[in-house]
Length: 560
Image: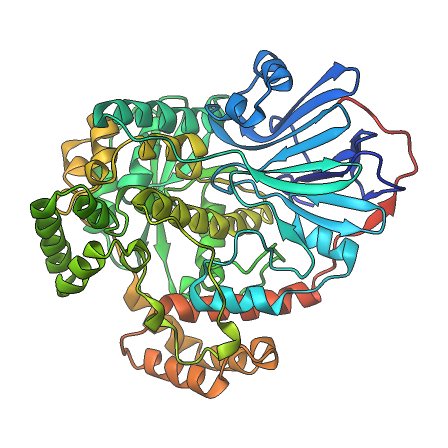
């Protein structure tokens, strides 16, 4: 087990003879709580006596005083909501266990029913091994269609997921779910901007404040901002990827423009070995990694960094979202602003503004947030159809839905990184950062003419002028076509695999799409890489040893 692969879980109060994962450390007896792996610096627990206990698992700045207040709080969610970091909480008081999943889903929590009671864990595949459940075809179908799978389901049959921002409550009678988080009421933009600066600084500090050297992606505005913040707390190595033979322009020029006392800049040259779809052995994860096609590049880039690595994932979702604010502009009578924004948005993307205005007039936030139901790939069968979770007709709800989907995919990447001994962190996925962004009204936090205005207003003074004025980010789409051409036989082999056997894809149509991609035709890459990742994941999960469980026979410890 790598030093960064860690997970935790437990059972309901008064449960029967319970098993624990092989090698787990039992922390509490009743209710049962255990941990596996190295949790140094990622776990804080408090025993309040008289069967009152609480623990925080993940990245958090909470100390004993904060934990004591949370243990005594009538509303556990409200007590922990403002803490920087990404973490889950388990509290046992008076014969009841509460397990809080964070508001974004950065630290997922799963649960399942067994003959001896309900068991929860941060590791879905381990629970599937406990119950004997395999991959869930219905979940896979939803994943292939648009990657926004039902929040309460995992990729394994019989293993449920606690939706982000919800609590799992366990008693002797069973389990129940209820929300503990809701979006804040928006207010003054200046207050929200100040709050964002505090929240994002805290998100970086909690991961770097110990002074341990960290590395970052040094590329776009999101990752550059994290690099600047991380350097305030200690040495940081910024890594900039670039195609072979390219020594100037794009991200390279922006990286060279950033000069900080404790920053070491490092470049990472992308060669043919790092092309998309390069064959590489992936570790088993709790769901298909959307980046499976990039593992050859991703793993090599992580190996070039340090043991703790920060990425800018999530920044686009927070600061450059889909134009859902148009519906709220119309609802609030700001028609001229809605027409102007729709026109500028459409012009930048070379589309007609008419559909946007029609959707805004109908307050169709779902249509504004997505490409619509007609975007399904032709190689998907009707078995991939599913009913999406309902999303409130607000821009805030659409943004939350988008960030949660990104965090769910990013968690698979953290599992991949952990397999090679790297702690991968995504500070933009922290709940406190999301709260700060939502504290501004939708039309204040976005702009059709400024690039990521809220991030610039919050932290732009820490960036060189060149970075503040940036309006684009790098793209590697050409390498995708090259990768398909180089790996075409390998990709075609994936067309007649497990997904086809499950009746989820039409192999002939997928093969035709791959041939077109190899010729350089315009390609819906997201659906291609989802199918590739899902097929690869099914093969990996089928072949990888499953986590093993053992009977609880040793006396349980009640404190860490």
